[in-house]
Image 1: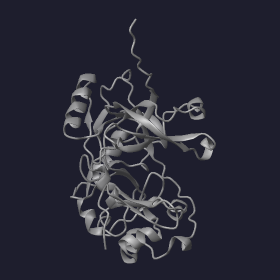
Image 2 (image 1 turned 90 degrees about the vertical axis):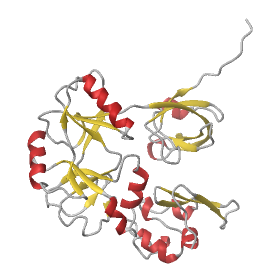
Image 3 (image 1 turned 135 degrees about the vertical axis):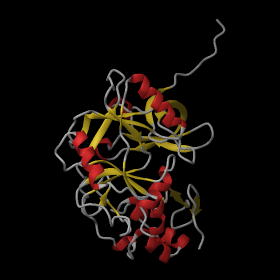
Image 4 (image 1 turned 180 degrees about the horizontal axis):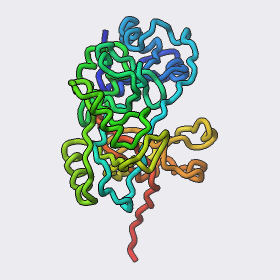
Length: 339
């Protein structure tokens, strides 16, 4: 059977006048047909007759971990997100001296509840039994990680059901123990005690004291030069809490770029009836969507088709697509003047 490799897409004719677009992005297969888009399942577990026609029934059943057709899929109850501590952005006015410093991993956040791994949204990661054999029953907060600049490959491994051998390349890097109601230093000592025998698949993330702003900037430059995403700062003696907190800060360099608006994508939920996202194209021909950073007034009157916008992003994917793009403003037109 033919296969779509990472980043590839193909058109396939179906019942509609226009062909449907089948894509493989980060190991997650998608189709533009209504049957795929309207399923009440996580995107990595959806399939349709076009994907089955392309890859074969057996391959698709193995990939999604079930033998049901989309029409037979029961509507799943909404997953419950785990009680994770989430970071805010570092403000340069915040003195980082004596805070705990670690690398911000470019992997997949994972919460071990003592039995299974859960995503930030509460979806289960289906890990091989040997991968979790030595994990304690104590909840752990960490990241499933492969390597720097390997986010898409990591996602493709942890979301799929049919590549258990690929988990050999994944490491669970632990950075907190949510159920231990003690200051961070005590939680860190607890982790180092219960995980005293690190392996290729499990270890505690290294933490070091920040010596000041210059140390922070030097370390950020070093990590980014190696392909890392950024740094994390943890307040000394802080407790684990659910939700976004000033005790956990992310430190990253951001990049600005420009793109041309080619489509207005309708909003859903509270944005129904107004802009949901802008479909834009870079000068090199790469298309993507920008869905955050807009004020309500901008969603009511979005930048027109053909306008050039400035947006901010963290980094580029392997395929050259900006990650986490945020709208900044519309570039003002430049006019020639002879006066």
